[in-house]
Image (cartoon, rainbow over all chains, first blue to last red; front, top):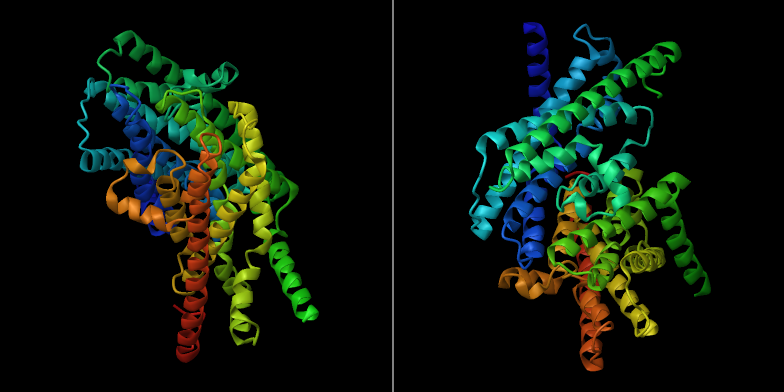
Length: 261
Length: 263
């Protein structure tokens, strides 16, 4: 167990350093939350919604966080392929899955800074008065957010190893997920036929939880419902990811095509 | 003379073809159709919720025009960076070919691509969000479109020159895109912005084209519309002039210091 923790922590540390060196990641982490906050503030300021600042901060922060994940975690396996380090990681005694998990957790934890940066931008530029109605709820929501984004990133990262067009799909994932999961607007405003897809993704419930922790009328019952559904969906996606990994690993061993998938 | 004109168009086509040769049908569908349309839907849905309106005409028009950034700013902005990685930059500088022609030929075919993008986005946006074109002067709308795209292409050329100075042109291009998203008036009225931001907004392309295009759906003041178009053309010409001058200055510095491909 101690060994597993040390592998994950070590990989997280290296990954955070590697990510911060890349200018595009720095752009997603530092510039995107600020610009998204400014854009959403000017779009929402005349909305006559009493809690419009919550939409601005949560929307800008989560969209930026998702972009960081899209352009980093999801493309990580492909990046290792281009560095020429993928076979080494795959054969390392530490275990391929554990190393990738450490990289994704590192990225996700670092990317959470975009939520803080969004809140900071709103407070400095627009003098936003942020009031957290349920601090414990927010902590649970953020922990669930990390778990959700880690699991989803793993699924997409492994899926994208099957294609050489990672950059294309990374670009394609960014906006649809932000829209379908209701990062900026409530999913209930989307067409009804999209709702089954929205509700089948754990991010949708985590977003509801995060937003709910700023809302004093968000009941314990609603809170529990969101937590239970998101936990269930995280579990389902974890099972999907495990199955996916087995299939991909088997294919790699049969075809010896780790760098050609 | 005819031979020179022919060579100019051949170079324009070769450059455009070279930039797109690596794209498969799947890439083309995703990059040129899916991503622009999803971006349009995304901002229209945000506007629908934030402005509490079903009338999304101005967001469909504004964001459709801004979608040209992909070809006008991103592709053209990265053109000299591309030349550097292809190893063609030193030949461009060493050749006796006109610098203005070198700069202009990079953008010519992107005018058509941008027009196609805007028409596709507006058609799609109109069907999805019910934009009514029945009272709109289509000829005037196309004129506004062309002027806006020309100004944006000149702006893209201006940005592209900076890739001779910096190695992080993608970062600069993304910054410019974000600025245009906020400051061009596609998503909220520019009058809401602070004075300093308004000044930057005046220096950007599309700001006036978006305003002029939106005017067509409302009361059209012909003199105001022509003034907006004139200003947009001036912005384009200013960027083209500055990019040619900058290109010449940087070229001289690079030749003198032998640092064309070194930062």
